[in-house]
Amino acid sequence: MKKFLTLLIAFLFINTSYATVTWLGGAGNWTNGANWDNGVGVGVGDDAIIPAGGNVTIPLGVLAFAKSVEVQSGARLRIHTTATLEIDGTEDLSGLTINGTLFHFGTINIYNVINPSNFLNAGNGIYCNGRIVTYPNSTVNIMSTDDEGIAIGAAGKLYQYGTTTIEDTYSNGISNQNRFYNYGNIHIYMNNINPVANAIFNARHFRNYATGYIVTDQGHSGLANTTATSIAKNYGSLILSYATHSGLNNGNNFINHTDASLMASHSGFAGIYNTGNLTNWSGCSVHSNSTGIYSFGNIINHDIISTYFNINNGIVGQIGSTFQNNYSLSVREGIYLDGSTISNSSLGSLIIDGRLNLNNSTISNDWYMECIYNAAHVFTGINTFTNNGILDDRYDKLSGNFTNTQVRSHKQSGTLQNGVDFPNILDLGAFSTVTVGTTWYDAEIGGTAVGTY
Image 1: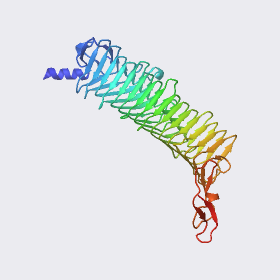
Image 2: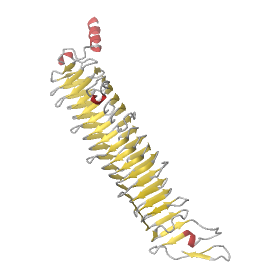
Image 3: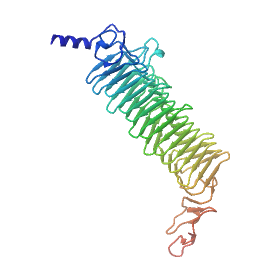
Image 4: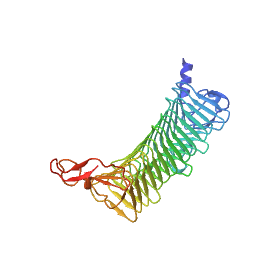
């Protein structure tokens, strides 16, 4: 019993000299001191290195401590179910560096990756230039880093099936330079101390799969997909909230796939800021403290996009931008276009609950469009507004500002006891297919004919 207690105390308080401790090679358990070059093992303040050829397992139920852990190229670390790796207090290294492989089934806690004398030289919570797989039911918690929570290098790959929580990073919550694939739950809470730090920065391949659930809170952008090589695809749930600039900042290619959900809310400048190509095949809702969607690029909608409760415009299209709607687009607080184009296709429903403000821009409606705004719209410059479908001009505010080839319905003037007032209800364009049928009167008995349909 005395021997057991002595070993237990030694395990819990080993090596308080705070050194670099290196694995000697081969396969073995983290807890076996003979496998480390100091003959004792890794202590709370030690930097642990697992070189090429090392195959280290943190066994079931073990609570392992270190100041930092580096898994070099050609090495492997496996953290078992119910095992925990605690990393605390490294200053100029990343808490956990994976240039080899990490198979993670248990718990990783990383705290205080901070250099008080020079925060620019501090490391990341996790740096991956190898391969990390976090399995279902695993957890990763990263809190208080002077650099990025998780940084994925140019050769790095992260496959996330568990639950990852990142809080209080000075730089990006997650920065991806290669491949970041999420199948589990990710929660990122930024502190907004650094005005340009994003919750997620993607420079290459980002995938949030059908089982993936990502929530970001604060940061410059919730997801910044802004380099020439950035490709982001969402198949799951992506909730981007309270960013100081934009929930989604897309500069290259972003696709919201079928059955996915994208929500951008309470952003300081725009819910979605787009300078690239954005394609939506599923539900997308946008609520901003300023503009809903602000675009210099190209947007194609094949499903549902709704902007609501935005302080400024629901959509702003700047010079050269295009927006093609092929299903359902609902815009609160109006649309401002400056040298921009919106096309509502023969499959589209476009509802605008606010002012239309067009400057040298183009709108075409080929199916159904509603304008619900009881005040004057604004048209400056040379605009092209063509209705080739059904246009519900609810309060009769678009007269004289568009070309009607099909059907426009608008506000009724006067009181009719029975029938339809043709001049004040429907305008039929030259290519309208509405056929002549019944004659309508403005009174049941002795009324005047007001139109035939």
